[in-house]
Structure formats: C-alpha cells, structure tokens
Image 1 (cartoon, rainbow, N blue to C red):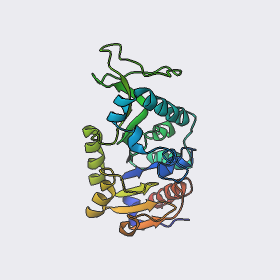
Image 2 (tube, one colour):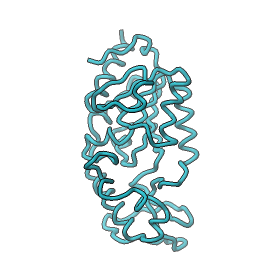
Image 3 (cartoon, one colour):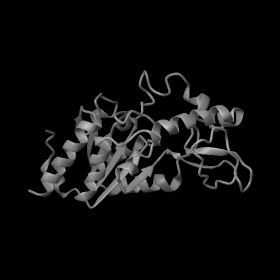
Image 4 (cartoon, rainbow, N blue to C red):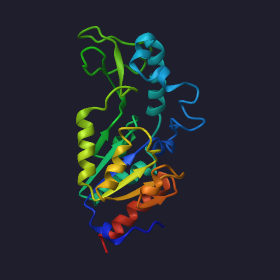
Length: 243
C-alpha cells in the first residue's frame, strides 16, 4: 500500500500529468521503448510538416496505422483510477502528452491534450475539422477548400495549442497535488509543468517503474506502473478524505 501524507486530505484540486507509459498497459507501445512504435523510424521522418508535404501518402498511412492501434485499445486500470478521482475530488485536471484519447474514454472530464489527438483531423489549409471514414486509405481533401487533410496532432517543430497550454499551466498553478504518471519528463515544453509545480511548492508524486531525471525533485517517487499505483493512490486519497 502507498502511504500518502495526511495533509493531502485537503487536496481539492489535482493535476494528473501523463505520458506514454500509462497507455503502454493498454497495448500502445511507448515512443522511446526499444520495441516501441518509433523504433523502426526516425520521428523526424514522419512527424513534421515537411515530411507530410514531401510524401503525404506515406505519412497518412503511418498515422492511419497508429489510429487503428489506438481504436482497438481500451483504458486500463490507471486511466480508470484517474477518472474515479472525480467522484470525491472537486477538480481533477488531466494534462496528457498522449494522443490516444484513452483518458476521455475512461471518463475523465477535464482533459487537456497538449499534443492533440490521433482521432481528430483537420484541413491543412483552412483548419476546418474533418471526420474521416473508417476505410480512408488515402489522404482526403477538404470539401470546402480542397486542402489536404492532416492528423490532428502536434508535429515536431509546431507550437502547442495556446488555449490548451494556458489551461494546463493554470491548472498546475492552482492545484494542491500534482501527479506525474508514466512520463520520461524530457519532452518540452510539456515537461516544464512538473518543474513548475515543484517551484510553486505543490506536493508532487511521480509514478514510473523506472527512475527519471525528474525523480530527485519529486516529493515522492512510486516505482510501479500506473495500472498498479493509481488505484492505490486513489484509494488512499479517498481514505484520507473520509477519516
């Protein structure tokens, strides 16, 4: 059992900051694992605007493959435990670097997707949302302007959506407890949020089966997967609030 300090009984606002590690237990390989989905490709070959413009069909097929992987996945115990926090914590903000939509599927209400979503698509030219067909094998064109349809993710070299980033930063500033779950904490600017929480004096718990560069800064590091640790943390928080 994970023992949490008693003062967290008064934690009314929680931020859960998640990375690829939480979705690994749902069968979605992490980007940086030796056998991960990026292992056979260099990210810069596929995940940027230049690659898309040079070979849109190749990039489209790759993202279609990733979308099908995501659509066959289901939330795991870690995702569900985070969603369950909303039953007894007044405000829970999930700030995720993942693009798989599993936090929303698990039932979390306030989800800030820093890097966009594999499920969403939009026109490269006019920005209009576009709903793709299940069997859309080739790059579609926007029915409004004829522009190419691109995945709704943030590619390398692109800025994070300003409104999403502002909401994530505000949630971090206002929280009582910050949980960093399944993330290597090396991809910026997203990785700056746990350090912001530390600077502001928030209580910070890291959940990761492996030590990271951030581990020495966290108030508590839990060396378990999200699927193991998050149900225990949720149970402890519930017990503290109902003593």
